[in-house]
Length: 95
Figure (cartoon, rainbow, N blue to C red):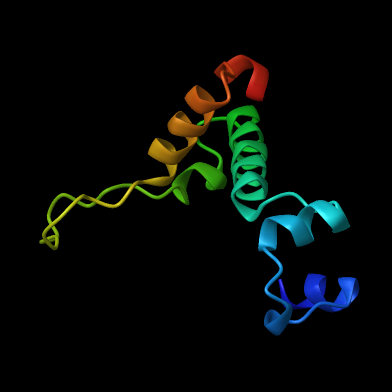
């Protein structure tokens, strides 16, 4: 965000909102970019056979480890399922 502000000639003292800076420069929000990259990686993994090394790198929940209180952390697969649902994309289309 610092570089975007610098490109527009604004500082934090100018009190210009981040959304306004992003709109002016034409940059997508970071959350949207994360979803796009996660879905791109999901498509890459889906094309590979199940025994490919890329499948062994997926994050899975370890049930034997004691967890902290509160909501459990999302696994990568749960995040992808949520992204597919939020964007109304089928698994076949993501490939």
